[in-house]
Image 1: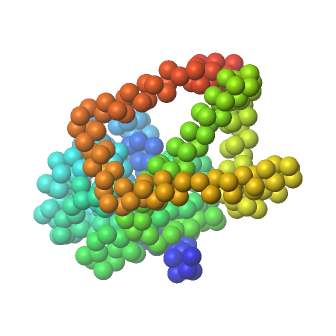
Image 2: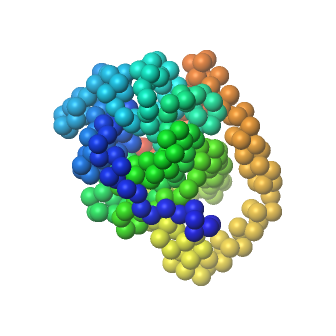
Image 3: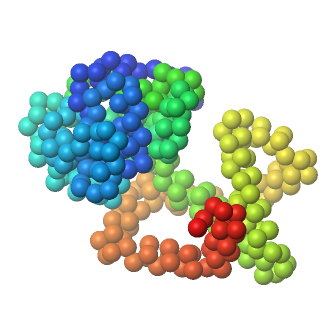
Length: 335
């Protein structure tokens, strides 16, 4: 990666005189709004009348209907789920923003702009500050005075200052200007590709490997299911290993394992690399890049999400899930 792709600082002062509307007070909305307020910015919340809005009010934010918040704001962070964002944008944001002289619209995901479900108005700077961190993680880093990684992109720059606004926002939500904070110069397209490739390849592959591992050891080798789930992830060792990957690097963390483990992993990596996984990953990348998956997901939603519901129910009723529930309850992690 070129040094020029890395961003470490942003000027929060560019946002000091603005009213910033956070649209959606979910995990990301709550975290980003809280950090910006702590950094001295004028933050309001735009949200439907639900429990999230009540929580925002209880936590001291001025809350408004979405269109009213956007009418008052100079910048809006659209932090609602991807599947509802186009409706929110078209019904509540566009009508009150189209006549403004200038407006800044931020996204935490490239999905809707990249696939054309949201079409920016010509009077907008359209930026993306996409934390590689869950909302609670953002708040934890903020409490420690530390930063975290973000992808930063600009889709439309009508002011000539969109990149500066994007970097300022990244600093305002606690990602930059702090130890451990770094932005990567990216794009809406790139964020969508890396995000969906994670969700379509190694994450389902990991889950599938768990299910296969479980079935073979429990059914064919008479291993107790509790021992299997502890070994896979419930012990917390997997989470610790992932943390060390993020700290030391993927291959450097190998030295924290026994030589037997290192040898077994290294030799078997090669076996998997010699399979047709390459073809599967390439097919997924093509479906993402071409928009085929986005069209599939849009159709699924229009039909009432029957495949999504069936698969979720199927997995939740599996023997794997029942053993997991029993074990987590025994460990006091689930009621």
